Length: 205
Image (cartoon, rainbow, N blue to C red; front, side, top):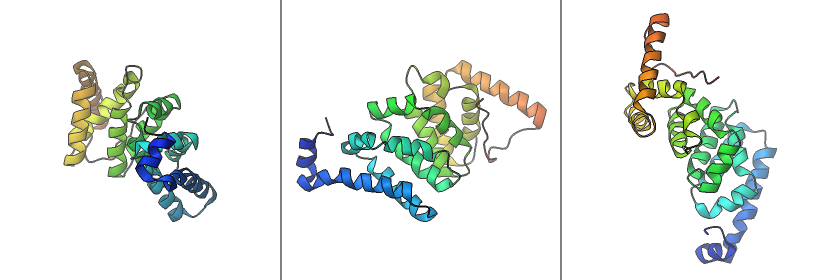
């Protein structure tokens, strides 16, 4: 209901309808430019548009959600951060969530948990929580993910620790947490205890 032309005109005036053309121009710029800094700037701009539900129909029509998903596999950490931020902003919408889930979004977001960027990891945890459905919960709360959240919950970074704790308390069963704790004990015996501040790496295979 937020994306009708009539609603858009009431909210922004007739000239606001031009945002479709503006978003289309941003997508073209992103795809055409090879300049890293400018590519980051354009993607960050697109991610900001994902805050407003009024843009969602346009974003789906222009395949911007797919652009965000593709950016998660970039080598440029900032592109990953901004693309994930766009997904995080957009995925509370029912249609956007369905599109992300149907197009392999969960494993791509899970991989971002191993990022060295705090903002990327925070967005990854938040996005995973937003993407939980009865159908996706098993994948999102798989053993490697829960074990990763236990490590984050024990880390000295308060923001990260608090968010991981919410994930564990709200989306994971006690049996899942216990299994992850047992896995940690096995890993500790084999490799020595993991340090909470270490960069997290997930085996999602």
